[in-house]
Length: 289
Image 1 (cartoon, one colour):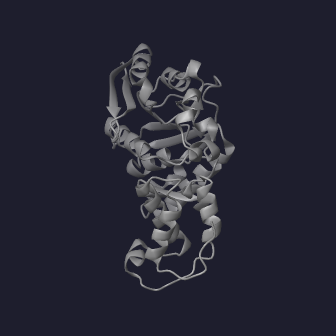
Image 2: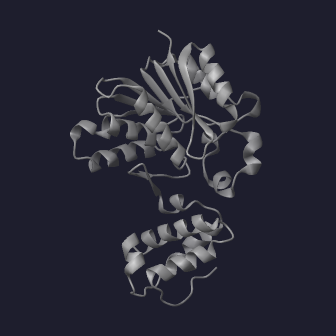
Image 3: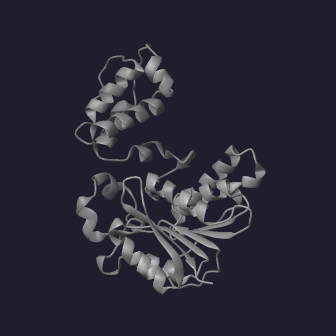
């Protein structure tokens, strides 16, 4: 597709882009992506798009549309996303944070007191979104975060630095988060934590066929998939660490299995929560005293 050689208002560009994407996205998603492209590409706000009658050209649109029509996520095209009030760098080295993971944060915050300097771990941090959100909400918590990918850790640290710069309260400084390289499945010991929060890989390889090209072609496979014959490998390792409280995002197919695994590891008060799509998505538990 070639960008038309004429001028359009921002709102007309939204309609044009949404129409161009109708074979790749559902209508509502195509419109959302179109607004995102116009806001970024023409450097305008949503209000500008709705109200401006100034016609403009869009010289970079052809390149952007080619990438979108190749199923590349718009977040990777512009190198950032907005999630839970944070502006985060993302790249093919990191997953794009999902709304379900924002719900994971809410569950974790509700589990532990805000007025104690708890030691907290974000396991499989990726973009750093979980660690940064927890630190901003609970400045007294001593937050650490691990990942197996050096590239992901570099992005996570950059996101923490940016979040700290955006914060006026030095007590919530996200640069105090300790990010470190670690293979969670490698058997190397970790210290004791009061709380572990994690969104580990949980998609079975057999589920690839149901996924979109945007997931398969661009997001990091090591952050997505687990083998069918050992789909709970990360949860088993997380439970073995013995954290005082554990809060994890899960594959909807394994809610009861993860609960049983936590129970066998000594956790009590185990709860399975459904996400906003009414799918089993979060399991929490407390270590028996």
